[in-house]
Amino acid sequence: MSEIALVYVLYGTRPAAEAAARTMVNRRLAACANVFAQGESLYHWNGALEAASEVAVLFKTAPARRDALTAALERDHAYDLPAILSWTATTTPDYAAWVARETAGQA
Image (cartoon, rainbow, N blue to C red; front, top):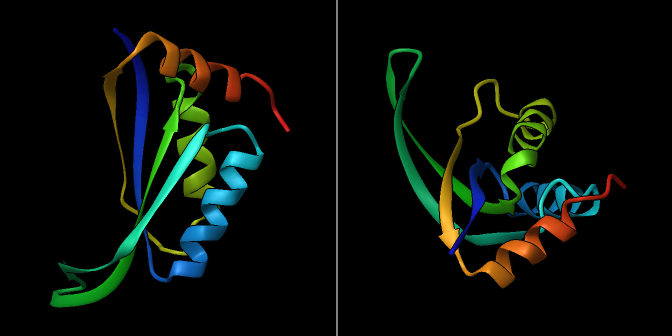
């Protein structure tokens, strides 16, 4: 088995989520991005309990590209404090090799 990096980010709208997914894949910072259905987030912000509809995106990238992807997502995000979470995942050698190939070039 081999490893890839997964990066999870929430967006306020589906168009914003889709735009981020396209941008990061086109920049070769991510090999793939899964845009999920809208869901509800509950959190405290500025002393109040907030509820917001958000759209999650799961980016798949090479471990060596995780920091560049995270930095680009943070820089481009509309939120003041975007939730950008990442972890390492084990996958098949062939899939990991595809992810590495897709993220090797900078567009």
